[in-house]
Image 1 (spheres, rainbow, N blue to C red):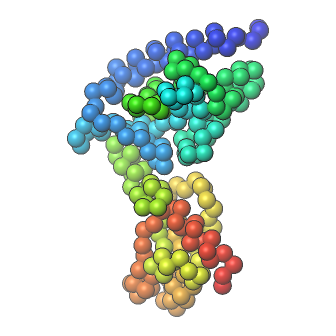
Image 2 (cartoon, helix red, strand yellow):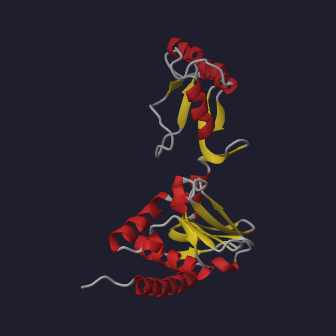
Image 3 (tube, one colour):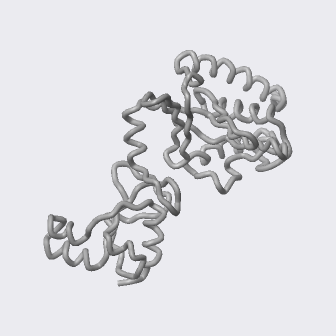
Length: 250
């Protein structure tokens, strides 16, 4: 069996996406909601009207500039968080394997029609349940919806993230108040961490050397040691900035 020409492959993917989209919208009336909001940190796309919400996990396929008529794959965009773009590398790998150049170049002249083709191809390869393109005047973001998320689960996911004045919306972390000064005070952790690690049931947790002394003296965390630590909530980026300051400090 010979190689399927790219044009034919893309056309077939668009047809499949149209069927998939019709099925999605027959179950979830996404266009009937008044608002939409996507968050790269949580990887959730939310439709809402008042307190009524509809949530999906999504991947960012890429963006089309109406001003410059150019396409940029999300995996080539440094401003797109890994949470919503890492899986798109499978599309690039598929393109490399089959010699489909449109799927391997990061940024190039294109059209909105092609942007929908790229989205359809991504949906096909990732077994997406639909697609969405938020309304925008100049830059169009194309997404593939990968999974419906019930409201309770969505709330649990969103509760793990905090809005930071410096770093926008990030995974939450807990530190003692003494680390907030951004000075060398020591950095003890509940477990070894590294940036962008996948956390499940745990949160980033750190405290200074003085807190560690009192924690040991009190044989663990109790009312006295917790009062001294005066735990604060920060974003994960702030957490690792504090950790960097204290690297090598004893």
